[in-house]
Image 1 (cartoon, rainbow, N blue to C red):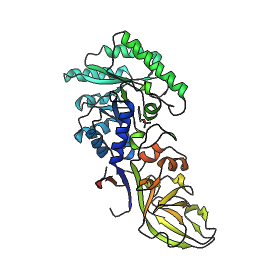
Image 2 (cartoon, rainbow, N blue to C red):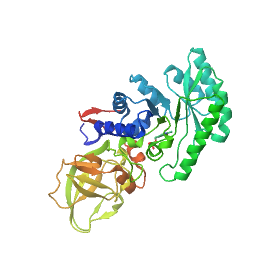
Image 3 (tube, rainbow, N blue to C red):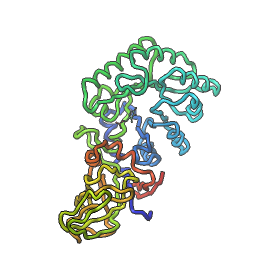
Image 4 (cartoon, protein in one colour):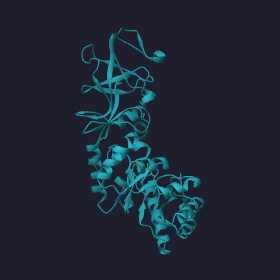
Length: 375
Ligand SMILES: *Cc1c(COP(=O)(O)O)cnc(C)c1O
């Protein structure tokens, strides 16, 4: 690693968070660990390996490619693809033992006929919409689909699920969703159509709606130690820290400008440190003139615009920081801490976007053993 910019991933923090979630939800509730998009940028293989060691029940991924990547790496846990996939790729689910989300009959029939050819029975999770408006039949119209699915001999209705769009802010709406979901599944059960797993809770659902954690949950964000809201009922530890180093320091006289567009003009004579991180790494351009970094336990402001590979920060004076010093962009490092939630707020986005868009070119260093792993 010659270019000094890297991401530290603390697997002990992940362990802590997984245990905290399991304890909070209760030991009878199965956990689908949501590890889509390279485990929210944390690097999917080491994260999946740690979760596997801890006895995770299921992995939730975003695409067939991600699921095959895990299978090729040797993971044998069940894997649910949390999206709808074209029927032309139905064979992948059967051949790699991947569980699809089913939202239409066309896909289900293709899958059924391939499973029949291979003499297999394929588990599926049917996704119904109770208010997200993204995937799945609206719950009022879904009975027809589910009844038809139940007739397909080489499929097994292992699960049914729905998704909350606003569990963080709108409890009336979320409670209505829970009621709609429960009455739909009860109606199906009254017709003899049963499901081993029923799930609806993302992180916020797990934290705020114990009644939604029927027998399975799908946490993502809190696994990584990030809070969806200011205060949550469990203590989680941030897993990711973004770090770099000061590569240059210079004195800038009053009236001189720093960076593209000359948006920063020194009001007095100051020292400016250039740090090796930029928007091509996923450090948001919107932090121009707004970000903060920590060097040796002290916060400094990002001044001027974020460049493709660099940012500039204003120092207090010429001798508090030196070239080569480590810079914390966000996350925890010893006692030093810049919450990614705060960086997201300053960048006018959400922490999900910050972590999942960090370039996979940045090396991930896994603590406690400092093993490096590049995606
Ligand atoms: C991403 C995702 C989750 C996890 O959401 P968090 O808010 O990160 O906990 C759960 N379910 C589905 C369907 C998802 O797409």
